Length: 109
Image 1 (tube, one colour):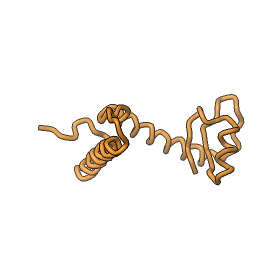
Image 2 (image 1 turned 180 degrees about the horizontal axis):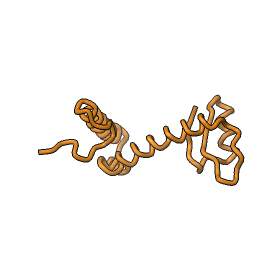
Image 3 (image 1 turned 30 degrees about the horizontal axis):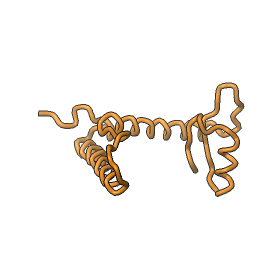
């Protein structure tokens, strides 16, 4: 199962994914009929919203969109450190009894 945004709604993407055994699910446009169960659509939208939130936080707090590296080894190491720092923040929030992805006021003096 692969979740995509509306940019992957074209039938050619779905056909390519089906050819290799991937079930591509995208939100449909307002004028398109959706035959999928409502519960399933709500679930994938909730998961996509969480993913978009996490990507936004990685971009905001860790500037993950810009690595500034000139080779793959350094970029991989830098991305791994950024993802580790994010996960440590989630862990600290869970330990403090706060929502997992709420990083404002994570460390207070």
